[in-house]
Length: 193
Image (cartoon, rainbow, N blue to C red; front, side, top):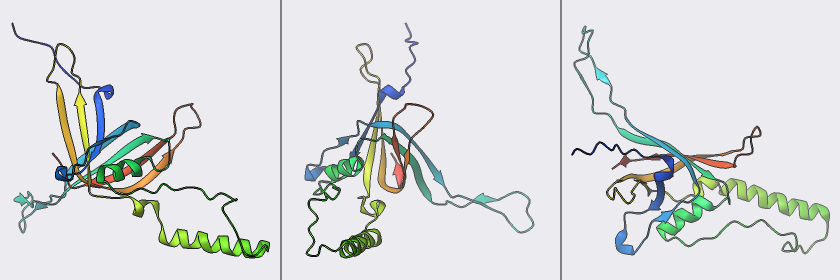
């Protein structure tokens, strides 16, 4: 008898990991458990080449390949993705901490001196530190679709989005509903395998 059961994947079958190519270092994939959505496209910049006076193109150039996509995570902490990436890459982590007013000690008690010092700190932070520039890059997203059950043990599909770099971020909150606050990350990558 022919098995007519058709398998398809749903969002509950989707798992996303951050990983590196260097398994010899003992790096392990890090599971992103706050995944809301992921979407990506792979495209080429191939263009047609026309001969002189020809209305139809004769051939097309090869072009360049790029992967672009968007990742949406539920907001739990501003450093959630950074921490996951650094864990996968085994980079030492320092989470950003807001400055506590008790930690601020000034030799001068003048309000103007404190304001000037704080303005200088803010200026230094904005000039030298961008959250996008602080994000590590050239890591992989491993996207696993698995709807295995007791009847079907081999229904796993894995895609690896190679050499990812986050290029923009956006925080999204809908005031019309009581849904979660999401952080969207736009990324580029070299290829999907």
